[in-house]
Image 1 (cartoon, rainbow, N blue to C red):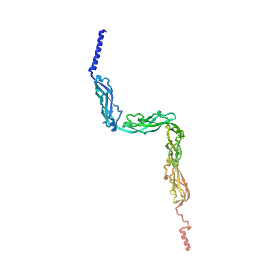
Image 2: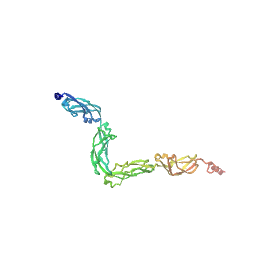
Image 3: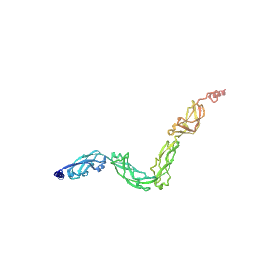
Image 4: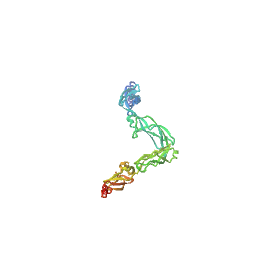
Length: 425
């Protein structure tokens, strides 16, 4: 290529650059730029809260904004050069559509378009509900255990849209045991974590309070557990046994635990029980001593021998005379009361009444005379054993028929008449 040709090419490039610079810096034609996902700042939420309303969802709304201006002014524009706001103060329950107010922070640029100019907001009732509190902490070293001495409340207020607050099953507080010292209590102010029934974080709710927790690390010791049982089962039943634990783990300051070898429980009164019965033990703990978290279920069952008794007393007038011989009457010669003890399974005996055990004697196949007869239950059942005291009664069976005349004249009207006639003769 000739030297002349090279000079022409260089000159052409220089002229092109010069023309481009002239257009950009002198003519400066208008142009547009699109800024995407500009966050919308929500205002007026204080008014919503005053009206007991809350938005549902994360509240993260965005719009796309088109800015127009001279090319040199458009160059380098960012999302910080525009603002987008939406006023929630006029919200109502249910679905709402709110205008988004978009402004340019540069005087040389204007908003050409907003996509979309309205956002959809769903509004529910704002509620405040107390949720149960759960303090979570990890284990300490061997032979030691973290202990919560006190905390400000068993519940914590959770506020937000009703449908979201209803998802919260509990509020968890995580206590870092590495911050605790042995035998030296420490108090901290901790924030809660709202969780659903599956242990997942529930967002978009507010916890109205923090919780002050006082905690310490204590030594752990296993001692004997004395289960105190008083009373007697009902229906004269006897105790077969129980499966209560015989030891319990306690915790406290090491010097306090040194003097303890056993712990008593609150008294268990079994008076009147008529079936196997389960009880939860309540250990009586000295001041400064607590139950260890390592204890198994402190409960057990008292089992009974499945035999019971029931007793009743009857007057002799209640004795039933069964199968009295024809043309006879009966005189009861035994006096006093009749007592009866019925024995059966506990299921049966607890339903037996005095009307179920009527004492009686059987007079069938007997002739006039005096007898000692066994007392039996009129409504006897093979499932129940009876013991009567006295076990026998004396009875006299007397015929009610007149004796026939044998002609001897003794003691009869005919006899008396014959004597008078003899006297007259």
